[in-house]
Image (cartoon, rainbow, N blue to C red; front, side):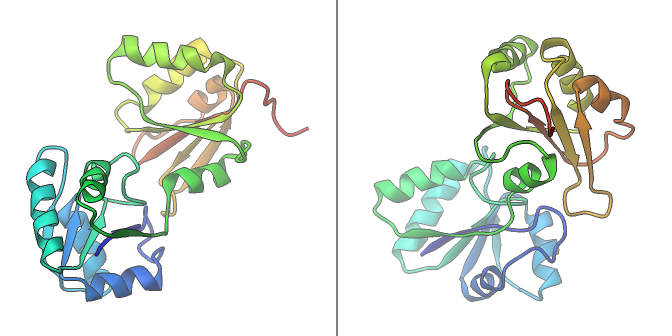
Length: 224
């Protein structure tokens, strides 16, 4: 059996008893980043062999996983943080597990998408997840331009290197939309900045950490 297992997005205490038990019981842990996963395992006294899985080695590692699942091995699959398959290469593995008729399940837990929606103050009932936007300016601006008529809340991941640029582009293309910027979720320096793009930009004093940007839908004008 393979277990896609959610791990903390910041605070290492945000993990379920079931996830810890499963990680202790399986034969192997497949992870996006062995260094980050080792920190979590050390926190809970879990000693387990690990193998890295990423966009560069996913084909080879997928073959290894399938081969050992067929031998009866139990394996946990985790991303660097949060729920697997969300902005990580795990979906490639899912497709091949289904093709091989191999059993897998999900151990639920932390999700940066859901957590940011709760903190944002924007409508959480209908939303879309856009992940990381294209690095090429033309493609990115085209995507943002297409959001002019979007009525649902949009959730975007962004790196510290590009966060200020993204907010500037939102000010240019969607200046009247309500947005929220959530940084360092569940950590000591967690912060949420809410308002129009210009307001968020003026209050963005530090660009360190992990960021989620949420854009209110076309018809959302804030709480009355």
